[in-house]
Length: 343
Image (cartoon, rainbow, N blue to C red):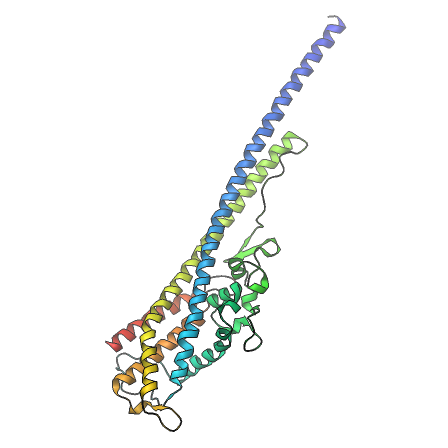
């Protein structure tokens, strides 16, 4: 075969090979594009789902914080003010049905008084002084010890101690650390002990110098997206658990409030209209049995409310505390005792 024809044939083969490689490259790029789009859909869907749960949990956290604030301000603090005007209380007095022991003593009442006194400063600044983070901290911990305040009238600066370092609470609360949250601080957050990867866009590898590399990177993106989506789903389940517990605490506090409100009103009326001694106090032992029972039951309910308010929902690892489940059972038991004692 003449040399020119051989060269023409070789050129044709080379051209054909080049066309095929071009088609292969286009196909690889198309595959990479589709795979990256799939990865982005998986990732975006997981982010949206987790963010929806976070917002729902954050709203329930704020609602619980507001309820706790109002219970301190409108119930416990006024209760202590009225209760301190009663003296000569016999916690073992037979006014209470022996079969319905209310399990309340002087130490319990001193504890309620102490908490009310400490919270007077907090509620005096108003609920807006707490900020979103302080409200979340109050909901989660319920104790003035976790709120940073210098003196009476000083706005709450943020959270202190475990509350400020609890990454789960920070993520749920969002915002700056001084406001009680830190969002995805350092590109990561912890939810229920699970370390979340940074919420960043998946992709960006498609236009590598070689089509094969683009395809390989796209599959790597897909694998990474699937792993992160699985991780976020686990976190989503954890967040749903936190939300459920918050709602359970909220419901039992509403029930306690409904039972306690008429008792507090009765106590305040009793204190206002009963004969008083030289120090302005009324004598428990001179009251009729009905009033004595009302006082004892109101003390039990105040103690129960105080215990629920101060029970931590999350531990320092961001996990739902066992105590928060136990206190719900205890509160429901107190409600049952109150119902029977007042029947």
